[in-house]
Length: 185
Image (cartoon, rainbow, N blue to C red):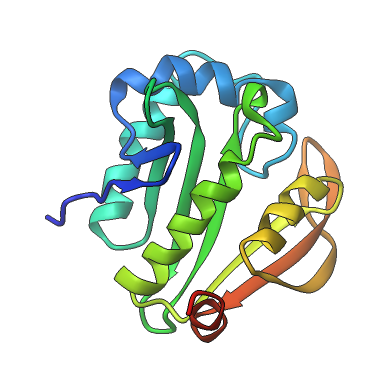
């Protein structure tokens, strides 16, 4: 079994989730405003869901399909959110990056800071060639994060999914290893 990585930035530590994170996950992800910005966070976020979400991850990591990090404050160790590389496709050397940030920590640059180091991990450690992402068109803040980390807008997908019974439009972004390397020379 491969050991889960821990990544560090100036203000953050990105580490594996542990069972004791469940109450904070439930509180942060359970906020309706946070849940409404993502495809996969339910609302209400009921008791036991955070524990299941944390426990279910290990098998995907062991199979090389996903690497998920708890975004925590480097000095005070409180949970800020989550970020992952998922749908990892080794044959095509690509993965999707996804994230959510607790509402008290919005607009503080934490997501961009975490996403930078996860891109670096994806390209330099996992050897990926392409990292892509999508966000609801009605959530432009997520698109700003994607642009800040060097991703390019690739398209607009009309009514590509449903959230809470409503069709959602999506924006798609991606960055290639060659673009990442050029930006970081």
